[in-house]
Image (cartoon, rainbow, N blue to C red; front, side, top):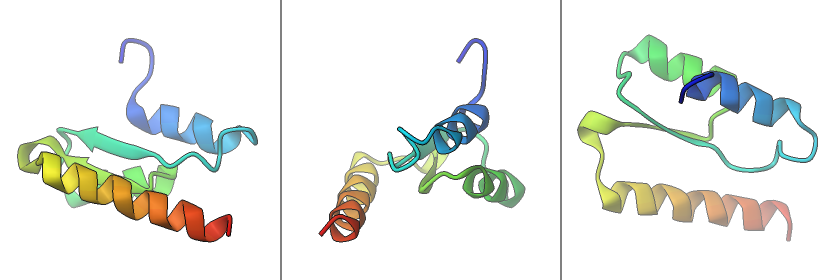
Length: 74
C-alpha cells in the first residue's frame, strides 16, 4: 500500500469504533515470528504468509472468522 502498511491499517481499523469488529486477515511476505507477533498485537485476527499461501487455507480462515463473528452476535 502506498501510504501505510497493513499493520498501520489494522491499528486504524481497531481504533475506529464503527470498524473495530471487522475481522482483519493480514496476507504478507513478512514471515518471521516477530512479524507475526507484531501483526497480532496490531489487532489482526489472522496472519497468512504469502510463501505458504493456499486458497484453501485462506477460505478456511475466512470460514473460521465468520463462525466466530456469528457466535459473538447470536
